Image (cartoon, rainbow, N blue to C red; front, side, top):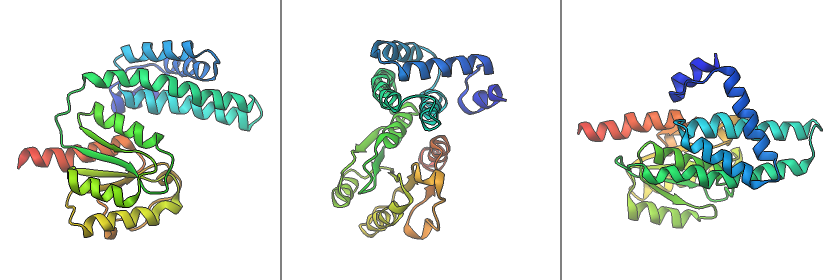
Length: 235
């Protein structure tokens, strides 16, 4: 089952046993106190033909989740969870090196968290996946105020603004930001994503000027290819 899913979703041919062994290696590297192990494994993964989406979503995220669950069930100390996050940040720059050779030949996308969302990791990972898919990226870091974000969008006029929300109580700020962009005359696409959408479905987003919302970055990229890139090429 995993083999079929990986091949269909990522173009990766990997048997279940091989995948489980690789994911276990990632978890061991994450909880290791030796950063050279994490860096070495990241270099090994970067040399493989796996897309970043597969590495991020099927290796790093599950391994980090398993380490956290094992701490929750008292199977490992909490310090291992902190170590796993530290080693994650060792691995990510190594994996991102491959993006330097990517050709950005599609319309630009601005990726940002809404004001009050201080958790930018998910937005940065989305930006990486968009870069790998050929989209030039403008990134607004955590802490960017809404007024500053609005000015950047209107000055740069990206084809799409991707707004990240990590908690459902940030939906009001999401809607306010989208409305403010439309009020200022922004006519590009506005989309919403982030961890919040995994826990609580976003209600009635279209009346707020949002064109698409979802938690799956690959679904978003497929939508972007279809609704923005393909239509521009056909015009």
